[in-house]
Length: 390
Ligand SMILES: [Zn+2]
Image (cartoon, rainbow, N blue to C red; front, side, top):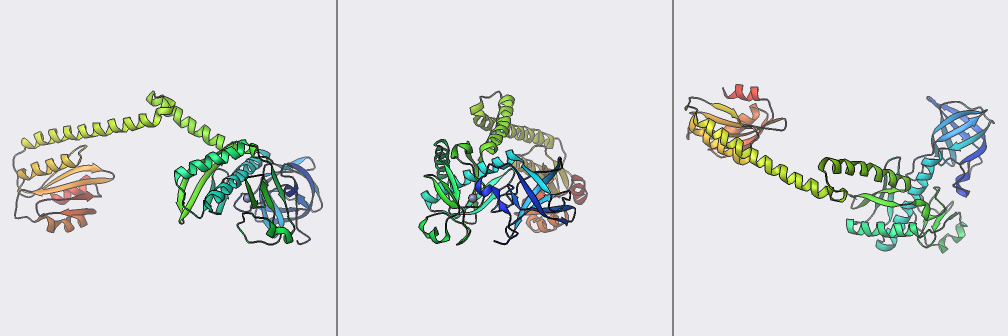
């Protein structure tokens, strides 16, 4: 360790939230300052976990610490104000966010330890941010497996296992069987969750698994051939529960559904909605065909739009329309930003399939078909389509 190395108070006691220290240096860096102390309880950004926030009290005045970083064992506290060298300060952690990170980090060790023991997968990536906590594993896990891991992890929480941390003698390291991301031989700090896990880690942890409160795995993703878990522990799990409950209660209220049946109710609503859409398309088809009957056969092309048409309605319309023109009958229905089209012709000598390329090029379209009908999408407005075919 270099003689500038900061004494890490959180190594010995992760619950030290207030401390006194002496400023070793204060360097201007753009519009903020990097303050180095002889000792600190602020945990810097490391191993995927964001740095601590808090305050320094200098002559009764609070100076905000908005980030903490580490460069070669020297911990830098970021402030907006300069503090003179050799000043004695009182450091105060923003405790609730810091303790929440401890809950989440210990939760991650419990989950990773259980996954490692059960499936042999390693934790190869970890991110502990303000809103999302992700853990990457080098093996595929199904939702079913993850649900079981969640149950086992929470049992480890409820059983209240003690957690201890220490720096073993490097000569003794080989005696321990522990999980580690890096192959270090010196300065290895071990975190032991009694009966659950042993892992090399530099971060502050809670002293008993019961303090983690709850472990919830809210999402899983496939990631580089392995699995990414999105984790919520302690207060983060409670916030997640709160936010989801707000959404469930809203749906419950809107659908007059029972809280535990909102999913089924939405499914039924979606089915009913699809049926209504189908009925509307049949109605639109009927009205369009009746409308076509009243049109006299005309020379040239005819462009007509059909409201709320599905494939069957547009097809019936396009086929009905071919009787009414000597040129092209262009049946349209709105779809997204453009129009879905089906084109027929009253003149059987016109080979529509050969015209598709030119029509699509002119109207920013795509599609094709047979000699007697082409279909696709025009990504343009109705005016341009009407103008083109007139
Ligand atoms: Zn860790």
